[in-house]
Amino acid sequence: KAGVTQTPRYLIKTRGQQVTLSCSPISGHRSVSWYQQTPGQGLQFLFEYFSETQRNKGNFPGRFSGRQFSNSRSEMNVSTLELGDSALYLCASSLARYRNPNYEQYFGPGTRLTVT
Amino acid sequence: AQSVTQLDSQVPVFEEAPVELRCNYSSSVSVYLFWYVQYPNQGLQLLLKYLSGSTLVKGINGFEAEFNKSQTSFHLRKPSVHISDTAEYFCAVTTAGTGGSYIPTFGRGTSLIVHP
Image (cartoon, rainbow over all chains, first blue to last red; front, side, top):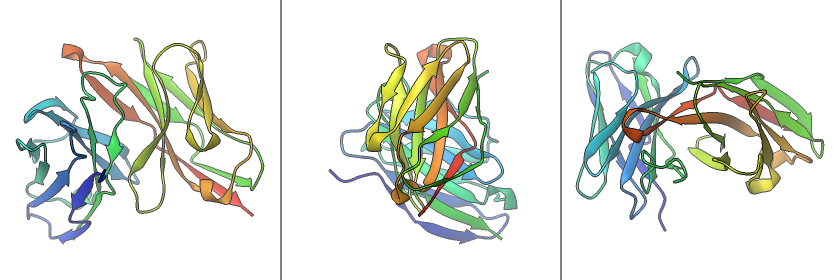
């Protein structure tokens, strides 16, 4: 079974631009979560989607948004990029984690975003 | 609100020695606890989890952890480490939020460095 894939793996953007990251979950998984990982703040939960609906949201500004498609693939968008948005963005998929923590999350390798 | 404290940012140890990575949490409600490992340039992988039942939890790669409710701790242990255990380890706690959903909070991570 193929794992979680994230594209692109590396991205360099300029302050003020916007960016879209993509995540393809494991086949059959309907829940996709996004996390931001930085040396200063560690791993922080961004949001979680299940069946095309956002189920949970972390404490991030409205510049961070996401969506999920009918095939469970998910995208996250960051508008008006700031230097502090430089981070590793991780996507994780599960059967239905938001309803039951027993469902294991499987993480992708991440997208490394650098904002200059 | 829940929080997780990983008491050591870095733990150096010699190969075949035992190791303990410490994790304390704070929450006013029932918790679910997890340990993840992250190897360089990869996403997170679940090592073990505590949801209920026996307080001693065994995971993959010879790791185990003990849930101590009175101490609000969930320390990770391995009796004999290998060079290949060199990685970043994250403790995470999840509690039931509004609407029955579960949002995870991660610790800042502990870098385990195994020397030959």
